[in-house]
Structures are given as structure tokens and as C-alpha cells.
Length: 401
Image 1 (spheres, rainbow, N blue to C red):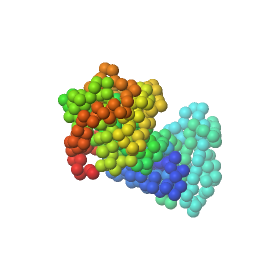
Image 2 (image 1 turned 135 degrees about the vertical axis):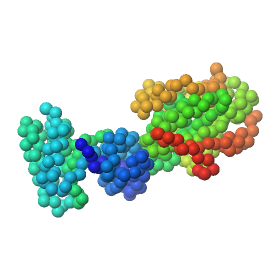
Image 3 (image 1 turned 45 degrees about the horizontal axis):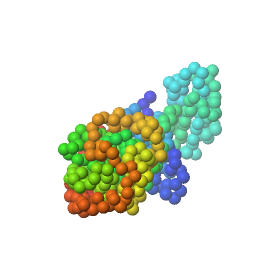
């Protein structure tokens, strides 16, 4: 069946009261961005639902993209016919013939926004139900949870019919909760943290620390590929590559081995917070899971977090590894994340890091560093790319502030 429209239902946006219009507008922008490869599609976002007029575009290619857009509860591809009973009856019969399997139940759900139409909703349900029985006399009606629910909507410009309802990603439209900087490593946890933050409406920008020649081009590309896996949920993601070689070499030179990880993470957090301020972000997001590694004990978090007052969101903090992996597999980042390209955290990881580091000791050791100079030189070398599902567009950082 060649669909002419996709009807989108909002879900959680119905609770947003006076802000509803802003949420719907953001969702429309996100849908437009995700469907940028389908220029003929026209988006009409109303208060109760969104209508995507396909204008000849292939619904089979479009629907998988809509499944990843946060803010969409579900959607139904539909076909438009003339607003006459013979045309509507014919399409109902065509739908039931293509959808029905022996033993299934059905229901007609009619909605009439054009009140000048000859039949009201109840009359439409009876008339079109009769049309179904003409094709399959043995079929049973089921009002609650039928196998086939044929939806008919009578609007000013025509009649729209659908029977499939596909589940959306739920959550809130990306961008409605502000911007956050995601500390994206090459591991399993941080892409999941980014995905979960996006689901609650956060516009995520990925901050990745690279230490060439200690970290490879493959490790950098792996991080970009991970960003590309979660980019479809927003349309695109800004990927910020942070040069970290000089900083790690200096830390390695002057800091005792047990505190290498603590001081390294403190410098990463300082840099991320500086980038957040430049990029007008509100929060920092990371993939820390409590107790998973030495830098993720409560004592380590306290010692590391001391360098900033910016809120740090940890969406996976209470999850065990199995729960995180389950989500990673769902969003298709797991197989990529376990590829053996080490990031800068693992390259310089000491064999016996402190699991209960003392804040005063961490401060004393990093006092040996030229913190301001190191951060300034790293910030001067930032590289920003726009990551999409299919491509990458590089731009200079100075143009994006």
C-alpha cells in the first residue's frame, strides 16, 4: 500500500500545559532535521498530533527514522482518499483484505473533524464495519485491543485511513531541556548515558579526549562512530575533539602513580566545564556507574568533582553492567564499544589507582602543574565536527561559539 501521510502522536507532551506549543515546535524541528534527506515531506504540527505529508516520498524509508525521534509516542502511516463514502468503503475493504489473517478481530475507529460530512462518527463506524463484513463475514468485532484497528479520519481536505501503529521512542523532544556536554569515551557506558539524557530532552554535545600518538586514529574514529549511533535520536551531534597529550604527559611526569587517574579526571572535568561555558551548556553528562572502576567510587567522585560547581548528570550511576549492556545492545553501540582501541583513560591507567583518594593530596599534586596554561593550550586546539547518522561535516571551533 502506498501511504500518503504519517500521523504522529505526541505522548508525554500532553502534560506540558502552557509550554506545549514550545515542545511541539521543537519536535517539528527535530523531525525536519531527521528527515532532511526527504525534502518533499511537509510537516504540519497541530496541538494534538503532527501530520507528515509524504508527497511521493517512500514511507518505508521514513518510518525507521521516526522510531528514533524522542517526543513521539507512536505514529500511523495513512492513505488519503476522496471524502466520499464509496471511496472510503473501497479503501477499508482493501485494507482488511491485505491485513486480515484467519481468526483475527477488528474494529473501526472513526473521527470526524469536518462536521459537514454526511455521517457522524458512530454512523461511520457502523457503515464501514458493514463493509468489512461484506468481505469477511466470519470476522469478529473486538472493541478492546483488536488485532486490526482501522482508523478513519474525516478532515476538510479528504479522508485518511490507517491500520498500523508503530511505537516511537517516547520521552521529550531533544533540545527542550537545554544543552549538556557528554564526556564520550570509547567505552560502553557513555553512549548509553548520552542516549538516556537525550530521551529526557537534553541536547547533547560529545566531548572526547584524544592523546595522539598514544591513542590511535582508530580510537578517535570509534568515538565518532559511537556518536553517529546516537545522532539519529537528535538529527545530529556536535563532536568536540580535545587535544590531551600534553596534559597527560605532564601529569605522568609530576604526579605519583596512585593519583594519576584522579588528577587526570580532574583535568578532564575542568576542560569539559570550560567547553560547556563556551558552548552555553547547562550540565555535564558522563557514564559513571558507582563502584565500577577506581575513579567511580564515592570517594573518587568527591575528589574529582571538587573542581566544578556545574551539575553532573550520571544516568547510569545506579545500573549494573548487565543493565547498561542491555541498553547498549538496544541502541546498537555495544559491538562498536568493545572494539579494542584504547582511549586516553586506559592508555595511562596505573596498575593500582587509589580507590579512596584524598582531596588535599590530589590538590597538592596538581599544584605542580601549570593548570591554566595547559587548559588554555588544549582549548585553543579544539576541533568540532557535526556528526550525523551517515556523514560528518567539519567546521572550525571559532565559527561555532
